[in-house]
Image (cartoon, rainbow, N blue to C red; front, side, top):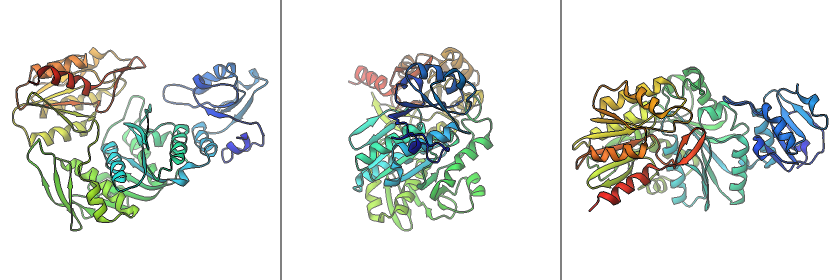
Length: 474
């Protein structure tokens, strides 16, 4: 594609050089590619210009062109914001694939992945041909790929959407993280529907957001790029801030309000029933927190134009990998869940208190590089709502796992253990348990790796628990 066509809308450039691909990581740089120097929280792409040049790149999009004199046979195109430029040129390069797909984005502190997956699975049951981009990866048609971030870089988003278009995907459901929105990874997309599930203090400090205002305003960017905007009216912050939009709720009056809620009291029968506008829904859920996710999903489907009868059938018996995933091990109920912050761990433990037959044991940790506040909150909620807390590793990255565990444990007053080896921690949970105990293995959910010193090392909670099951089930 001609460079002037790729750059259209990002800057004034009339060169007719031919570009084979766009790269923002010098690892993939080669002759014929355009290199975009991105600035991030931990690295600056401008530092890798030399590496890209040595691999054959001769055209660079930069914010700082002060080094251009050292590369006399290269072209440096200066822009005010390379992240915005990457989004624009990627969208041009892939010929605006978002315009041929119904685009839905979900943001919020809690419930993004569950809500997105409910919509994705329901669309399939209703005969659509959907795709999904988010925490669990990318799925469409018979294709699957992993992503490094919940919301990938803009080039990856448009590349994936282009591939979805080739497969004639009709709808794409995308998780819009606060960082993804802040870093302009979705710039250029005008979403058909945007959803805001809820907001609470998370992802603040460290390399993420400096304060709550930055976190909230980043998430609110989705409203500006959505044709229809749906939000949770029971969330006080959203209710006070958002003055127009489509609403769902359990308590407040709203466009889609769940009433006559009945939640099963049998832990081995996960089911909730509720009404919306007189229509009766039966879903696989045992908590009001999860009912909010279904309400958000149902609102999306109805606003797109599906009939109530289609939606009612579509949302029955939906299961989501790594979200309240149950495994019975010798009459101990293991629950794998991605709960990795205060509000998500609290919601699952409060829900399980309703079903408690004996002890509740938690196995959890906290990601390296995150704030002490998150670690303290995780410790306190486990201390309050679980009978035994086992503190372990959860993507320690460049931090010492034992140090993280000890820091979390310092906030726990009740019965607790520390075991940095996560597989050993899960084995310990079995040794400490009795029949009819509930063991919540929290934080990793669907993930199949531990992030250790910048490398993803294979690991799976589910695989560890299935090993236990094989060893102990009669």
